[in-house]
Length: 298
Ligand SMILES: [Zn+2]
Ligand SMILES: [Zn+2]
Image (cartoon, rainbow, N blue to C red; front, side):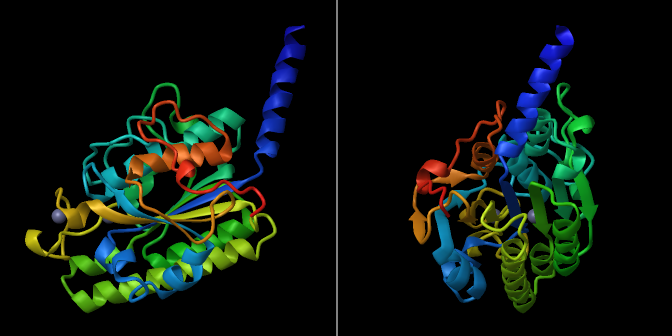
């Protein structure tokens, strides 16, 4: 009898997993300030602005209200909680990540979730230290060194592994800005912009992902505005560091829409949870889907 019940529950979970045959990809352009993204229209992000924006929804009042550094920013995105981690990659998030929620809910294999990043200190994102989750629900992790190698890696993973929930970090904009050279910073944003467009095209030309995937593009933090030291660095609570971009494109996202309601990076995890039908009980953010028209036919 007990065996039958276990089989029945396993069957339901299996069906749930395949019924939720949707995918989500979250791409973080590391450290791009709003004034050089949506704030400048198509000037530095022509592909995102002219080709992707009409296909989706942009959030124009989107912020990192926590620590505006790389590791805490990324950890807050994937947990939906404000994570006050150091920025050296020593400590893992303390509350469950979207990968752990996903794998635990659907009993999904490790290969179903992927963390594809360009900084070694971001390997902490694969799983949290939470006692009910942790390593056994962690994501498969792929580390490269710059935007181009991350995207090369990602394309290979899309073809071979077919993960359903993918988190991507494009590191080069932040690295270029830290050199203090304005033209290098802008050129890195332009490269990231064209790579984001190739990611979208790679998804749309793959039958596993085409019309079954929601893509988000955001940032972990911005950069100081002119009154707080300028674009070279980041890390405080100035408007330049806090204000970032969010674009959603694809399944369940309305086209050609501007959402002006204020949102934060903690809203991304519950949004991903709603899209893929898994709960995110520790998250303190709220799903952003009510800001965009749900349209399952897209
Ligand atoms: Zn960063
Ligand atoms: Zn600042």
